[in-house]
Length: 105
Image 1 (cartoon, one colour):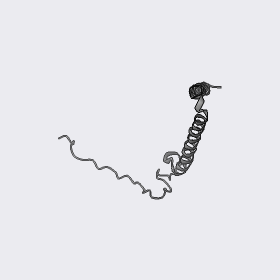
Image 2: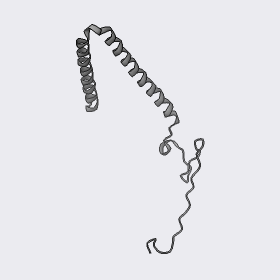
Image 3: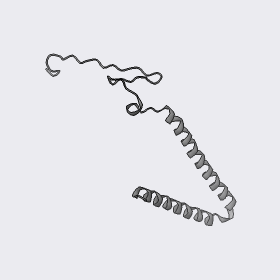
Image 4: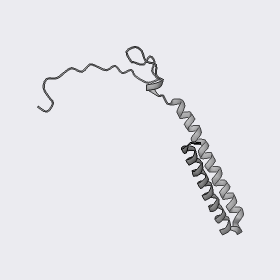
């Protein structure tokens, strides 16, 4: 296990510990209303799961639209793309003509 995984597991453990302490304190403080607290915690957990799921679905949808031009576009011998995505226009650079003098003169 490398340092990054160790840090990830440590962070997840600290988060779970903090959430457990908060929930225990919440139930102890509001024990007469434990049914309302339980349903509220369940609702917040469910909404969190739905938001994470919606974000993942949106990421999957966006990923299909993304295009890494420098690594995924096949180029011809002159370095121009052989095909373009829908709606894109080809770019053909024009050679620069030297001008007389400097712009500050």
